[in-house]
Length: 210
Ligand code: 3PG
Image: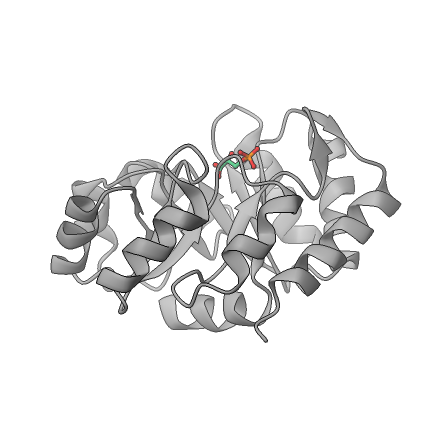
């Protein structure tokens, strides 16, 4: 399953990350993102309505790859899987969750920032990692250095990434995909459907490997 996720992200290297505040607003944004070419979307489980929104998203778009974000323990993992998540992802390492999900069909992607965390993650067999909070932690320039030391690790950076920064990430071999909210919101305000569709399409284009 981690391999399927890697292949999908390699083809479309942009992952909208949505922390839903309102289910209808989130579903409309998801419709526009899918129309713009999104094939993988992460819904973060940071609020009461997030799991219902994930479930609604699953029913509405059975073919997209749906990730559940901010998953940090086995119980939340099980809830996310039951709601239809194809993978789960966390902002940091969660050893109990990583042991629990080892060998399971629905992959879990742990988060890292430092070389020490990457070394520990590799020791437990993790080769696909979230880099969070990317921009605060050095963004593309940090990932360039880390990529030289850890060529066998693929990263999914997110956190503070804006459209104007994509060029820095795009050429890095160790960056599998970039995630965030820039393609559907600006300063917390959601964009209109047409703007979302266009921002998604042009972001995918910018991230396409040459
Ligand atoms: C994440 O969990 O990855 C962040 O919420 C990304 O959102 P941002 O692009 O608004 O920082």
